[in-house]
Amino acid sequence: MIDKINSLKAEIESLVASSPEEVEQIRIKYLSKKGLVSALFNDFRALPPEQKRELGQKLNELKNFATEKVNALRESLAAADDDASASIDLTRTAAPVATGTRHPLSIVKNEICDIFSRMGFTIAEGPEIEDDWHVFSSLNFAADHPARDMQDTFFIQRNPTDVLLRTHTSSVQTRVMEKTQPPIRIICPGRVYRNEAISARAHCFFHQVEGLYIDRNVSFADLKQVLLAFAREMFGPETQIRLRPSYFPFTEPSAEMDISCHICGGKGCPFCKGTGWVEILGCGMVDPNVLEACGIDSKEYTGYAFGMGIERITNLKYRVKDLRMFSENDVRFLHEFDAARK
Image 1 (spheres, helix red, strand yellow):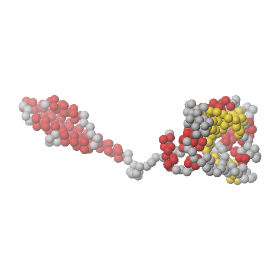
Image 2 (image 1 turned 180 degrees about the horizontal axis):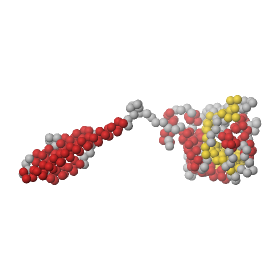
Image 3 (image 1 turned 120 degrees about the vertical axis):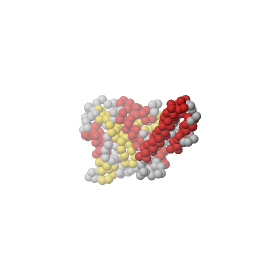
Image 4 (image 1 turned 180 degrees about the vertical axis):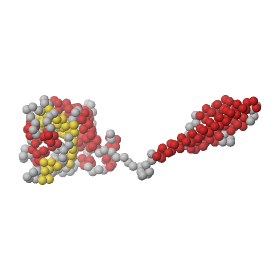
C-alpha cells in the first residue's frame, strides 16, 4: 500500500495542464469517487487494524496533495489568461494589418550612406531651392553652359537673381566649403530636378549621393581606392572597377567609373550589353577654380569629388527596368522590397 501511495504521489507531482479541460480531467482521474485516490481508500478498509493508523495518515496526505496540485494548475492557467488579456489592445481592428517597409530608394540610399560613413564621411544636406551661384557659378560652369538653359533647369525666378530647383547636390558641397575650412569629408544625399521628358529611362526628378574630400596631399589614387572599396561593399568583394576619362566643369581630371557586371561576372550579358562593364558614377579631382571660389587655398589643398544616381544603383541591385515605378507608389511593386528591410 505504501508503494502505491508513493508511486501515485510522484505521478501527481509531475502533472501539467494547458487548459481548464485538462485540469478537470486530472481532478476526475484522481479525486472523483471512482478516482485513483478514492480506490486506495476503498482498499484501506480491508487492512488489518494495526496498519490503518499509519496508512490512514499517508492517504490523507496524498488526498490533500492531489487537491493542492489541481488548485495550483487552475491558478496557473488563470494567471496566464490574465496576462494575455492585459496585453491585448482592444482598440485594434480584428482584421490583419499589413506592415509597411522602406521605399527601395531609401533602402539603397541608407546603404550607400552607411558604407561611406564607415570610411569617415559625414552627411551634409542643403536646400532644394537654390540660386545660380551655388548650383552653377561656384562650380566653374561657364555663363553659356547648356545646363543653365531652360531645357535642362527648372527656373523659379530669372533676373536679377536666378532662383532654381537644384540640378545636382553639388550645391551642398559649395555651401559646406564656404563655411568650413579643410579637412572636409562629406557625402550629400538628396533629390534633384532636371527639365527632362519622363520615360522609362529618365525623370524630371531623381536622387543623388555626392561625395567630397578636401585636405592636404589628396590624390587621384585616394579617390580610386575609396571608390573601389565602395563598389566591393555595395556589389560584392569580387567587383572590379574601371575609370574612363571624361569631362565635368567642377573636376579636373574627370572620369566616369564602371564596375564589372555583377550579373555575368564581367563575361558579357544583355544587362551589360555584352561589354562586361556597367557605368555607375562620375568623379574627379576638384578643380582649383572651385576651391578658390569657395575661399579655399588651391595651392595648399587638393580634393576629389564623386556623384552617383541612387536610382541607377537601385536598378543595378534590383534590376528595375522602369524609373517611373519608383514614384508611382504601386504597392505591388513596393511589397517586393519587404525582404530588403533592415
